[in-house]
Length: 187
Image 1 (cartoon, helix red, strand yellow):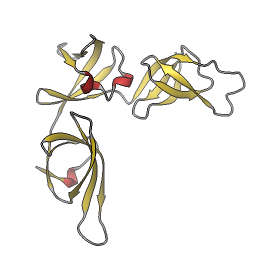
Image 2 (image 1 turned 90 degrees about the horizontal axis):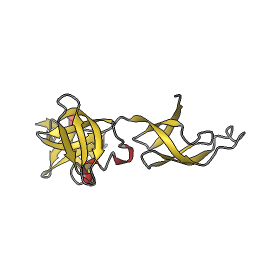
Image 3 (image 1 turned 90 degrees about the vertical axis):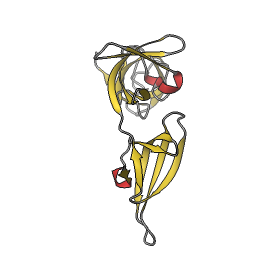
Image 4 (image 1 turned 120 degrees about the vertical axis):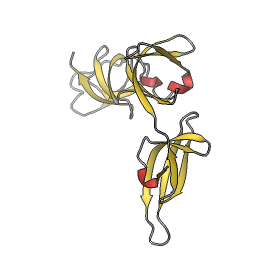
């Protein structure tokens, strides 16, 4: 058993007969009354996000998860197939298991899958990925000094805002957490 002092973002708890991931937390010590911890929890299975308050020092069961590296192989129409980088065994995951990372999932992406025993509970992708622009308006010469942006469609189908000088066919580095442009990638 652990207590609220062990809370960190990303920790998985066994709480209210389900697995919950801590998205945010904040220790609060009011002038009157006992201290408490305000958290934002996300249900690992359903994706539901709730706010929960715990008394400071309250005992909580933290789930120890095992994470292994996988490479995303392909989508067979029903399942997303990943290959273990060490054993070369394949695992098939449903749409609901990968929906958090679906916007940036392309073939041969190195991912990390977290397991609770044998049950996959979370798929993680790199925070920064290099992706190709497949569709955007042409940039106009001389329009780059103002710092304007335009929409651009990535090879995964996601539309992000990029600077005006970015052209179709170029690769850009994208922050997958915030879904935003970072920089142009030199090829």
